[in-house]
Amino acid sequence: MVLFRLHVFDLTSLKGAHILPAFSNTVDLRSNQPPAIPTFPTGNGTISPHSAAAKSGTPQPPVKMATHRSSIEKNDAVFEHRPSGEAHLEKVPEAIEVGPYRVYGLSTEDADFFNNYPEEKRKKTFHKVDVRLIPMLALLYLICHIDRANIGNAKIEGMVEDLGMTGVQYNTVLSIFFIPYVLFEVPSNIILKKVKRPSFYLGTLTLCWGIIMTCTGLVRNFGGLMVTRILLGVFEAGFFPGAIYLTSYWYMPKDLAVRISYFYCASALSGAFSGLLAAAIAEMDGVAGLEGWRWIFILEGLATVVMGACCFFFLIDTPTLSKRWLEPEEIRYLELSIFIKSGGGAREEAGAGGKVNWRDLKMNLTNWRIYVQAYFLVCQSALSYGIKFTLPTITKAMGFANTQAQLLSAPPYVAAAISAITFAKISDRFFWRMPFLAIPLAIVAIAYAIILSLNGALEAKKGVAYFSVVLAVVGIYPIQAAAASWNANNIAPASRRAIGIALMNCVGNVGGIVGSFMYLESEKPKYPTGFGLSLAFGGSGLIVALLLEWSYKSANARKAAIAEEAKTKYTEEELFNLGDRSPLFKYVL
Image (cartoon, rainbow, N blue to C red; front, side, top):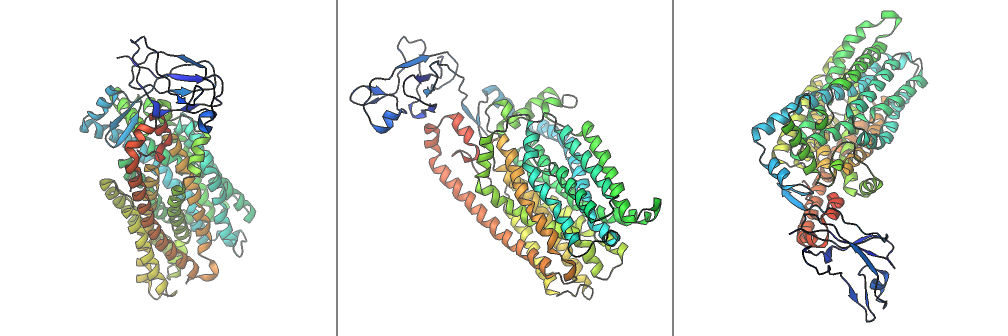
């Protein structure tokens, strides 16, 4: 039977467009009978159910209607009012269940292809993506964090004294980076969503911050250093949320945490490499008449410029633009996976280059759970930047010389990299995010409780002090991968996810400002403010993680109770547009 979706237009009183799913009907075009128009009796005629008169109960004369029909092969006909007197019909995709996903607008043929795609081929396909995407993003993230945190290494090589900085000027330089970094994250991801070649956009950002980093080695005073840190924040702002979005674009939700952990692992290793590189580069002190700390910025900045240029050639974009290394069947499978996890809709919506509208922005800004998720990043940012900017100073306070302090800052980050990957792999294995966020936060709280108990006797009890530092860093680095994947898993559709990821990072990186002022020079070696706040972040983050999972469980229970009713009350298009707020969307715990 050939069926259609019928749009009915009220020519007299209707001011806007309304969908009436409750009056959904099926019409056989082979019949000579006109389709039934849903009406309400009023005593003096009939009126449209959504007209002002129907809502008020005021009797009105019969409403003049104009209809038009055009056949399509679908199983529903939904009456829809529009302000125009010219009627039309549109294709109404139905929903198909594909695993845990309810997909709007997917053909049966595509669903069969996706469901029957051999597991061996699936692994081979994603392995191809893995080797081209993850190492590149991990390397970029490694360089990003080295460039951001090498100022801590430059500090113990004499930068503060050479630039005549006093008081809290060093802390101010650290914190000023985060103001543009926070402000530009959301706009950057909106731009990225519109750009068809992420490689070009991310490559340009990397190239620019590499140039800024090189120029940092040439500054002559506090003001010059402030300017370079502000510009560094502007250009680095787009990389991290862009990398998260690009990863969430290519992979299914259950495969996401471990992939994200790989470049968080790179972030951890940046702490190790930063110390090792700084120790080596500082030996260039006096070369070309420049201090050793200047060469740290110059050489690491030039390496970043080279990596930015490499992005244009080696960073992958979308399956459609990857015909050089993907087979046609692999491209089709990857495109379908992107389409399916987004819930369907228009193909261009699920892909890169789609529109990001104001409705998506509003839905994210009013989603309170994104702000709760962002608190985990506030904790992680404050903890990681606080320790990263200060670890060489803390190890030096244990009684080690400059070079030894630089080298001893490496092992904690190696342990952190192993920790980040291990927690993420287990999280993906069970597709459960909360415990692998809560446990690292508990480890952080324990580590800083031990450090605080030493009461500043870092040199006298250097073994316990160093163990506590390692334990703290081991707990800090799994937090971000778990929080980022948990947030990305619970935002739909794709266009809304792009903004939601950036918004979470935007709010979360406020913690970087806090971290910049936690460890005050006047408080060393006890650092009561730094160690005390770190303990507070670990403990409070643990409590918030438990409460958030309870909130998701409660929401899922409420949704399950009205799921069947929602299928009859709303059209598939309306359910799709609701995204993660749809009664059929199940939150990941």
